[in-house]
Image (cartoon, rainbow, N blue to C red; front, side, top):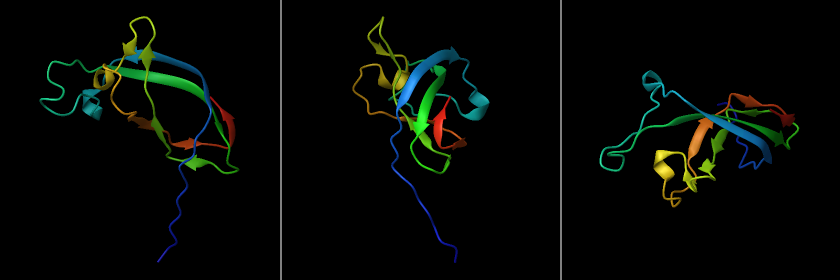
Length: 104
């Protein structure tokens, strides 16, 4: 059998965060899941960009991205699953690869 390898968790400094609301792609599964828990909530999708620093001397393959996006003007999350600020920090997405060093 082949040897399994795992890395993590790896915390990376994040800066220069920007985001825009984008249309949800329901054909890709970008919608609210569940029934009663999400009843009456509108799905909102965002595209976020940030600068990160991978502290390793190797690329990270398919790392998960976790976090929140809070709107300072309305003092709440822009995402339907975290409007009360009480939810845990969920996984946003996975990135194909993050090479070593500073990346945007």
